[in-house]
Length: 164
Ligand SMILES: Nc1nc2c(c(=O)[nH]1)N[C@H]1C(S)=C(S)[C@@H](COP(=O)(O)O)O[C@H]1N2
Ligand SMILES: [Mo]
Image (tube, rainbow, N blue to C red; front, top):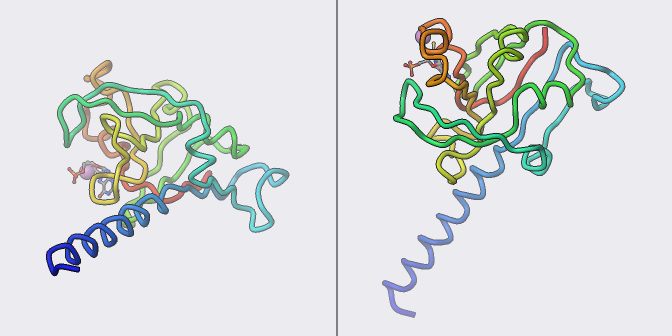
């Protein structure tokens, strides 16, 4: 085999491994004040990649603090919380970069953000806000959703959620 071909093969294998790894992050744990009947023995509700992809998909076309207008797709955050048997009135969203942010459930009900796993048809990677990015319809309610206080609620690289 030629050196060039071998390099190409190695590059594509590394590439495939890297994207498989990013895909592996597409999962979500919900802990805290949730129904114990449906949570696992560890009291955590685990969404696998398949669970997340199996939920009804919603899309929001909006700009964000970081991007121009894009098409974002994923399940509604409210659907995810309800599926996990959420009981509390506030959630704390924790990200892979250890950022965390509290969001009142009333605010989520009102503005129906999605947990976006796709941007313009492409799955989000860890280095572009993935695996999950909380997207609110900011362009529809710019005066409310564009404030600094609410920009904090656009949590990217979402890893887990604790219900308070
Ligand atoms: N994962 C993650 N999401 C995050 C943040 C963060 O540091 N990590 N910063 C939040 C805050 S405080 C704000 S104001 C907005 C904008 O953050 P940035 O302008 O520092 O990127 O993103 C929010 N989402
Ligand atoms: Mo901020």
